[in-house]
Length: 227
Image 1 (cartoon, rainbow, N blue to C red):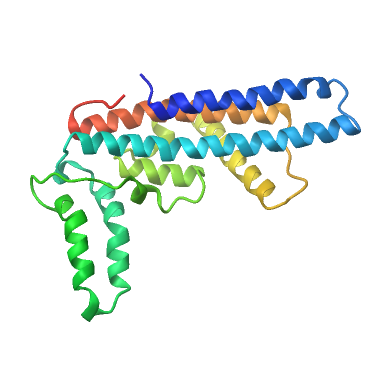
Image 2: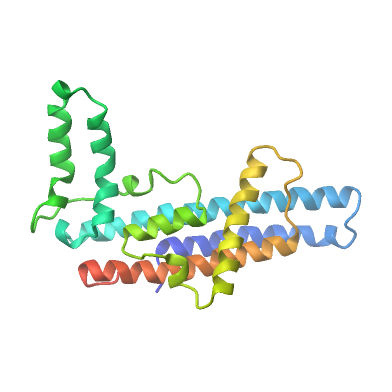
């Protein structure tokens, strides 16, 4: 059973395919005005797909944290890396405050995160903290995120060969880079129908497989799979 985030992503990808249907008549004679339309549609597909891809991680992260919170998980059961990234914002905020003014910040840290570092105490995680650092779902950022959940290398975990791993990494990196170029006004940045099909395959492959691995990682924490 997939997460709600993955189901939403699959529905959203339908938008990309609908744009492909719109582009098909123009691809029969890809020249002049038709070529301009194809370029615009391709650029739009890249932006939409990248946005839906990024949204998946925020959604699945929120879903995962909500499940942990509902299970009243104790701090000692949560991976240290996850606890550290969760506690980072209040610690950083306190470190930027003068020593004589830290009492209030320290009290807030203990109140929000003290349970994470105590024995047999349950509390509530804040999902926004786990992804506050991510600016785009690049492969290295995805590796970093899944490490918080105890998955050392998500790309290695969801692929069987170096070739498939490299192709998946490249497809995701290229999608994000192409989207960033478009967002920054690089007029030469475009995507062919073949590019779009490859990006969609990369997004679907990664999210479907990572979805299952995240569910298993959460089950190691609380003994029950969230989806």
